[in-house]
Structures are given as C-alpha cells and as structure tokens.
Image (cartoon, rainbow, N blue to C red; front, side):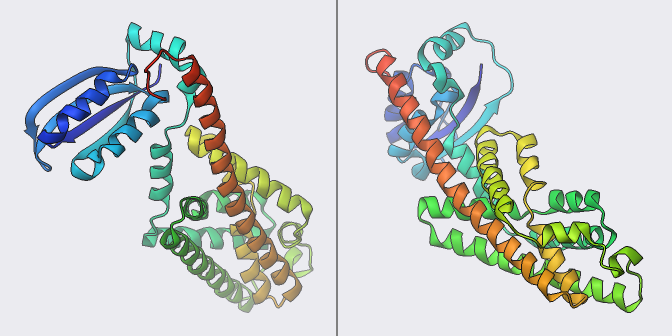
Length: 322
C-alpha cells in the first residue's frame, strides 16, 4: 500500500473548506486537526494521509482553494503503513490508479534538478576531463564513468518541463546552463589535451591513429538517434516512477559528455573532422532528448488521465477523481 503524508497550515477562515474537502475524499485517512497551533504561517495545523494514487486529485483541490498561496502544503511519502480500510480502498476503488505518478512530486524533482549551482559546472567539467582520458587511452570504462558523473540530464529535463508548461525563463536558464557547462568542459579538455600533447604523453596507439573509442563517439548515425530517443523515453518514465536504476542507465547510454570531451581532444590534436562529428553528435543527442522528454511527459499525462477517467466511472457516486 502506497500512501503520502500531507501537512497543511490553513488560515482559520479557510479551514472549514479544507476540512470539507478532506472529509469528502474517500482516499484520505488519519485526519488530525490542531486549531490555532501553527506558526510561520499562522493558522490551523491539519495532517492526514492519502493514498498515493489519489494524491493528484487532493492536491488539485487544495490548489483550487489557494491553500498553497494563503497557507502551506507539505507532502512526504509514508515508508510503511498498516490500515485495512486504506488497503481496501486502494484495491477496490483506485485500481490501476493506485500506481499513478504524483505529478507535483515529479515536477518538483525536475525543478530541483534545474537549479544550476556552481557544482553543476564543476561536475560537467570534471566529467569532460574523465572522458578525455578515456578517449586518449581508449578506455570504455572511463567513458562510462564520465557519463555517470555528468549532470546534464537534469538541465535537459528542466528544459522539457519548461516547454511543456510554457515557462520561457526555465527554458532560457536550462539552455544557458548547458551552453556554459559544455563550453567549460570542451575548454578544459582542450587545455588538458594540449598539455598532454606538448609533453608527448599521449599513448602510442592514439598517436598512430588507433582510436576506436573516439571513432565511435565522433561518428553520428541513425543508431545514435535511435538510442537517444529510447533513452529519452526511459529517462522521463524513470523520473515519474522514481526508478533511479533506470535513470542511471540513461546517463550511460547517450553520448553527450563523451562528445564534448572528444571535441576538445580532437581540436588539441588538429583532428577537425572528428571534432565536427563530435559536435554534431552532441547537438543531435541534446535536441532529441529534449524533444522526446517533452512528448513523453505529455503522453504519460494523457495516458494516466484516460485511466483516471475510466476509474472515475467505476467509482462510487460523488467520489472525487483520483
């Protein structure tokens, strides 16, 4: 049984409507009210648990009452709960909607990843340097490590959410972060590779043109697009389902950080064709991930909306939409 704990602070003049909403919701349990006990903001403290699959409907209702603006709404997952009534409601009334994503939670997670602190650029630069070592030494392990370290997917999903919600500021911030971050990564790998070349420390195989890892990165083709599309779908689905392992698979399947690293390495060694191929690879993957992320978000919402409509027709008369 999946439940979420909801903590509310309600202005006294609004508490009656809030309690009416909560009492009318058959998926709300363990309702507790503490009149006048809340501070910052001042008001009545209200707590309850709601079945996760019905949380979207409850949050919509609270938003319609403007409680998020006039008071406060905090939601957290319940790690373990035992309730016969709640379990029966989940099975008999929610059905498939018991597994519906909580969209406010999903978007909150994406918005958090769209905050570009200095560490974002540090991670991106360090990932590029790791990738450059992997390219010079033909080490696929280091290329995978660079993909895991890179934080760029957070910016990509933030841009997709901005496009979906029509937030130009979020789109601009994400594009700016990606541009600055990848520029720093390319510059760092370029300077590092210049030092390696100046000191004649490049491996002999790389010097003789035996560069299988680099050749794989700087040769974009139809398979690059296919992988980016599939990774974009899995990435958004894993975010909505909170599946970290699947999201990690996205990080190590799409050539973004390695492509940026190969641009710097190729320029340092005057391999202009390879640098151009890596630039195309980088741009194609970013654009595909953004577009696929946008439409996967919309498709998932449409699917769950349709499931919710079917479930609502089966629900008891007067029951709110989950």
